Image (cartoon, rainbow, N blue to C red; front, side):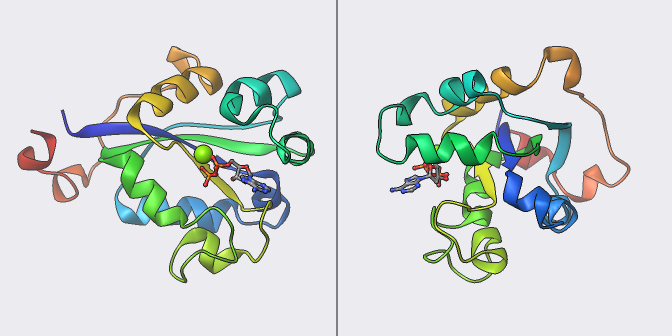
Length: 156
Ligand code: DAT
Ligand code: MG
């Protein structure tokens, strides 16, 4: 099954700057399917679970302050190699380093306020999706144009 799901967060800076639409549009126009979507505030507890690998690092306190400061949009998106495809669309971690054409490279210039999170592996994706979504908040559905986005070879 080459179809994967990944967790995307449009971070508080993206929401505050009115970039929910432009960022979401990139995933939709790429052909990826939104299977979960919510506006929510990240708590410190959720931050410590989501960023468990960064707890204790020098930038952790600032990261949590930023991520809990204002609502974010959590998305679960689905498609062939969705984890890798989304990471490439996001660009490098710091917007200053991200290539033009990527989300971070087109919409930001900050290091820490880098607009978007995307899971870094299928295992992380499964874990992170479980932190943000209940099973009943994720939807399996067909779209009218799906046959022209993904074929049997892509699904094999
Ligand atoms: P990514 O979001 O590209 O997967 P990451 O998982 O290494 O990057 O780090 C998580 C977030 O923490 C990242 O989006 C921004 C922040 N961050 C990482 N390294 C940092 C650093 N050296 N200084 C400040 N913020 C940092
Ligand atoms: Mg990461």
